Amino acid sequence: QVHVAESGGQSVQAGESLRLACVVSGHTVNRGAMAWFRQAPGREREFVAAVKGGTPYYADSVKGRFTISKNSAKNTVDLQMNALNAEDTALYFCAAGPSTITSQVRNPGAYYYWGQGTQVTVSS
Image 1 (cartoon, rainbow, N blue to C red):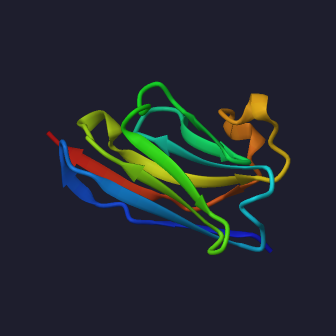
Image 2 (image 1 turned 30 degrees about the vertical axis):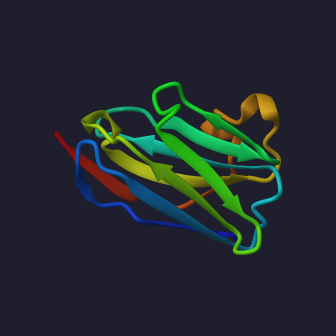
């Protein structure tokens, strides 16, 4: 059974940094793709970042501020978020896609396993 669990979300001020962690069991993070998505109230779930093999992918809105990293030994995927702003406020989800192909890394429908989310709130 695959279990995905996020942690690290909290309330911060604009300009501050946060690091989110995703711990995966029952599935290796080296298989397929791992990704972070987010969902703000009243909005659809949107792609934030993904890693497939050794290649990272980012949404334009976070490029240069967020960094996704994979730790194969610990079977974790972290999201370092710098220079946060109010638009980054959302529930952040970690997702695992054992069969996700490169062209679909930004598509939430390509991921099989999801965590419950961790809340990030940025005050301006």
